[in-house]
Structures are given as C-alpha cells and as structure tokens.
Image (cartoon, rainbow, N blue to C red):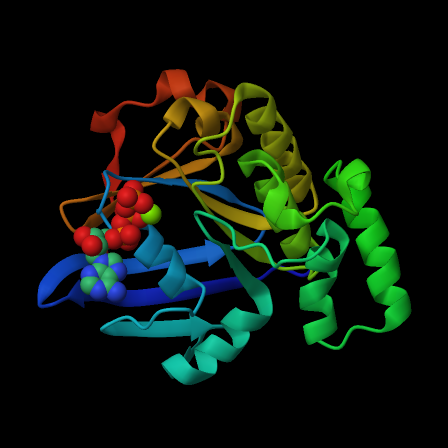
Length: 241
Ligand SMILES: Nc1ncnc2c1ncn2[C@@H]1O[C@H](COP(=O)(O)OP(=O)(O)OP(=O)(O)O)[C@@H](O)[C@H]1O
Ligand SMILES: [Mg+2]
C-alpha cells in the first residue's frame, strides 16, 4: 500500500467567536493508529470532520507531498483518501448488502468489483448472516460493523472513527477491535476517539488529547499493549508548543 500523509499547520476552529482549538501542526498518516481523547465538547468530532474535509476550519495551511495547497484542492485529496465514520452511523433504509454497495455504486465501481468487494467485506466484518437484513434494524454494534465494512470497500488510506466503541457491549467491542487490528495490518491509518481509554489504548501507538484548546500528544510505539499501564498525563508532550 502506498504511504499517504498530509500535514495541517496553524489549524484553528472557533464557533461563535469561541476558540475550540488551535493546533500548530498535525500530520496524519497511513499505517499508524492514534487515540484522540478529550472531555465532552472539547472538539474531537469537529477536528475529525475537518481532517476529513467535511467541515471548514477558520484557518489551516495544508501540505500534501510537501506542497502547500489551498483548502479546496486539499479537500479533493482528502475526500479520495480519508473517510470519517460518524458517532452514530447513518444506515440507509435497505439491506446490509446494499448499504455496503452504496459508496462503490456512487463512485462508479464496476459490477464485478462491487460483487467481489461486497462478498469480501461481509466476510471480513462477520456480517454474512445479516446481509439481507434491513440495516436500520441492526443493533448499535452491528451498525458500527456495517459502517466499517462500508468504508473498508472503498480502500481508504485513513479512517477516522468517532466513538466507534460507545454504547457497545464487551463482545461487540471485541469484534470492532478485531476489525481495527485487521485494518492496521493492511496499513490503513486510524484515528479513533473514545472516552473509555481502557477499550482503545491497546490498539493505538499514539495518543492525542484535546485540552484547553490545545492538542497534546504522546507516543507508545515500542509497547502498544502496555500503553494503558504506561499512560501518565504528566508524560504528555505539547506539539510544537
Ligand atoms: N455547527 C456548530 N455550531 C456551533 N457550535 C458547534 C457546532 N458544532 C459543534 N459545536 C460546538 O463545538 C464544541 C465541540 O463539539 P464536538 O462535537 O466537536 O465535541 P466532542 O469533543 O466531539 O464532544 P463529545 O465527546 O460529546 O462527542 C461543542 O461545544 C459544540 O456545541
Ligand atoms: Mg464527538
């Protein structure tokens, strides 16, 4: 898989003249998994939506392949490579299979490719037994798995997962965690938000926290599984601060 990375500098966002965050520099890249935490209202969803080109920042310089781009040009690259999964995934009033096919049809994939990708994705996400069920009738955890499968078939370089573990029971969390591990193995970059650090820290090599309008980062590349035990707020580093 080709490496994809994109850098945002002087990224800031305000609502109604209230500063939400001001981030001197942030690079997101394929092949890495990062946990984004922060209290309710700290701006996690807003940041992910900006990184996915779904919401405009008040200011941002974007560098792709070391070239500075306008926000509009950057969004074209972003939309091709980065997918945001909503906190409560929207299911179309159709079967699980059709929900998975939707994005591929929209992007003009061939019929054969749609058929093959859908079959693989149903298997990948352990959804074969539910393929003919109406997706709106599924449980929260099953909907999250459909949302992941629906994104997976589009071969993104980076997935932004907003609270994929919230309101999901232990079995559902395990299944989603397994899917995220498979995505990581395939070199897909992941940023996931969560309030429950214990569910997600073992998946992530990096940790970012939105706090007091700043983004604070720490890394645990050498020992991912022990991240939970090693994590100490005092070890956090301010990015470029
Ligand atoms: N379109 C909008 N207009 C005005 N304010 C907004 C808008 N979208 C978000 N906000 C505000 O920005 C702040 C950050 O919202 P955001 O949803 O990004 O937080 P969050 O960290 O994802 O919270 P949570 O943990 O509850 O999901 C909140 O105070 C919210 O009310
Ligand atoms: Mg949110």
